[in-house]
Image (cartoon, rainbow, N blue to C red; front, side, top):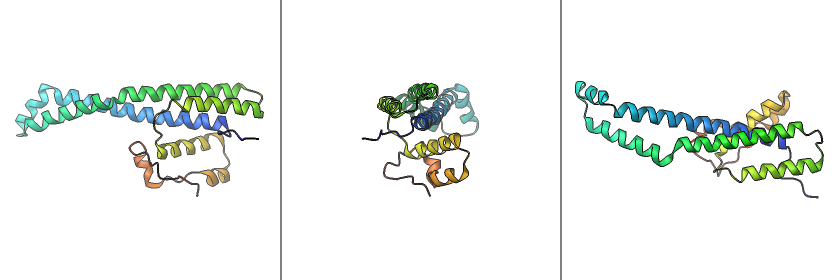
Amino acid sequence: MKEPLFRDPRFDALRNALYHTERRNFLDRINRGLNFLVIVFGAGVVGKATERFSMSGLWLELGVVVLATGQLVFDFGARARDHEFLQRRYYELLSEVELDLSPDEEATKRWSARLLTISGEEPMTMRALDAVAYNKALDAISDDAEMQKRYRQHIGWRYYLRNYFAFHGHNFHSR
């Protein structure tokens, strides 16, 4: 008999929901920050301030062009909405799993299939961020310190770069 790809649908739905929550929040912060900078740097008052402090207006203009181009090309707001949609789908699935009173093999296969269906819509996974979400889900489902210690994934310095690089070649093993 084949084992389902996802062994604990409850844990995996929670982990994926936490992953997409963090990714959405990160992309929303970038989106808001870039919008703020484009508006502030594009305002005429900043141009007057550069004259007052003997700064070259060329750098300000170049900065506005680079920031606005990056905002349009990478469309962080739309990417954040994608993660918000996936986050909602995983939380909806998690609530359905919680309502299911028959955690038999058939139910596990059914939830595994639903998880695979949703994961097929996901963009490239940021592996260090996924390890962070894994650890958060582990903390959420268990108070057992020994189990948390045994299964916690070691992220190290990659934690700070979790939203910037995918780290596809790295395995985040438990210690």
